[in-house]
Length: 444
Image 1 (cartoon, rainbow, N blue to C red):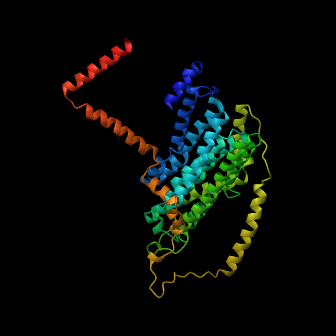
Image 2 (spheres, helix red, strand yellow; image 1 turned 45 degrees about the horizontal axis):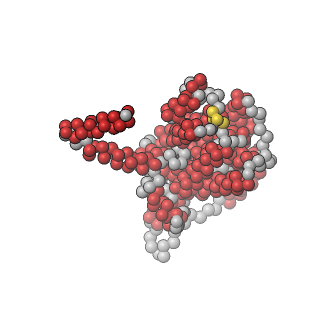
Image 3 (cartoon, rainbow, N blue to C red; image 1 turned 90 degrees about the vertical axis):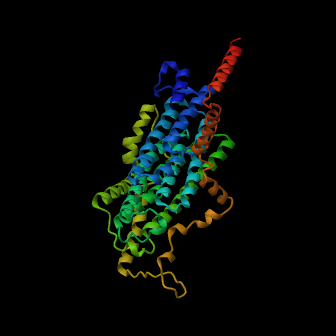
């Protein structure tokens, strides 16, 4: 970040070190280098590929409450805010930089959600989804479209809501059972119904199901990509179509992953050791339930509340007009269409209420908790498929971890210098003489 600011100051010394109304043309090596430096800072803070690997490690080893605050919400807001300033006020974006941002955004979505699907620890599963959602933000902000840009910012706000709700719901479960291991959980929905409702709503929101807020922001991002393709070259249109497919595919995999998450914790057969678990305390379930309801309200009344009061005013400061949306989507009508069959089904359930719970048939053996059908088994085949198996193995060995690679390179370089600086006076005198000879050669 500091290096990028210094390069901008070298290119535009009259602007100082502020990131306000610079509008630097991306021409020349220094301009592109400054853009890359600020992009790396933004991606690292938000958790975008390939600078995302710190987030799963942090979430695994830290308290769940801090995960809800930092990688789930605050870091996303700061990192994407920097990226938004870059593409609007610092640089005049061109096709190449938009292409780069959108490609990295789509890769972030797919790679992170594929890693999330095979996790057996609830914290790591949510941490990879915290990474995958950054991809949608980068896609929208980097699209070059006003609708897509607003969608990226809206998704940043939405992610802070539902991701915080998911981490806090998992934290409430962890406080009651003292584990986040999905293999050991199950059937807690009957013990913790309010926590289940909160987690269910937030899961629908992050998966992009209407009428929740996650769908509306993703819908805006998709519109921005379609809008950009209308005036693009044939090759760029094809690539935008590929990126759009990756984004929609990632959203479908997110839903599949949270089916596993919800089933592993709240559904299925409950282990005997958790039969006496009680609902979370009032201060826990009320906070997660409020967040879940906000996700629903921000989805149904997106135009009337968050867009009108939070996002559209930004366009006035940038000198842009309020955009027109493509297509027809009325979340209020859709909510009614969903609500009517749900209420009918709920009434039928209350009238009949004849659900049989049974154990897995074991050929006459006595039922045991170790033979339960757990949600973590849903996608085991994906882990063993080639070439995905090799990619998963390499990822677990941190072959793609840029921090681990950088650490290895740094230790190799410093190790070399440590070996040649042995502490002997004669060796240091030799280095001084070699340095003087190099200086004489350069000067003469």
